[in-house]
Length: 202
Image (cartoon, rainbow, N blue to C red; front, side, top):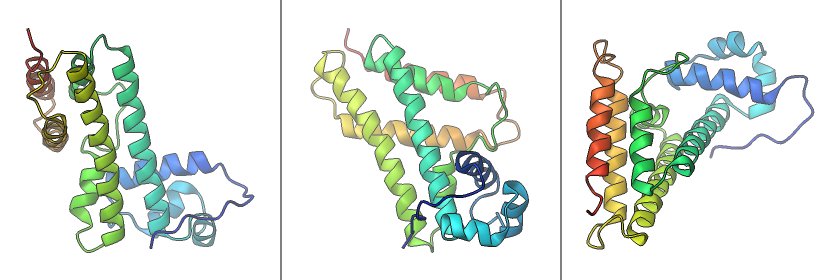
């Protein structure tokens, strides 16, 4: 089982360590990141890493939860600034299609990368799937809010729309890994966002 390290007094900044570990795991993947890579990036000895996080898997699990938390926070901020639920969902997709102001470790979704990389690791796979379900639930809640306000027809299924949106976003993020994708991402995201806006009842 994936254990959570006991809280302890330590001579390091846990938040900064997790930020650095997240960047490394996001860029190289779980299996592609060696303990030596972590030692160098975190400036911690193996014994300190294990004392703080229990194992490499425990550290990775914390970074995966952090990644999902930040993704969900960004989504909720976008929704809060939007005039309607569908407008918020469309704005979220458009933001994913824009070139980030700061280079990210990878344009692919860390959750998807983990799911594809860990078919033989049930704990990490289940953790990745759980975070995906959490985000998909937020999409469904937004579609349901659109339905409750009359923006979305009563015959629409919010859960199905949420699953379709997540599949579309994951496809978009995977496509972004192509070397020739940079000039196409905005247009692809715009098409997906327009599909969301087209759901609105006139």
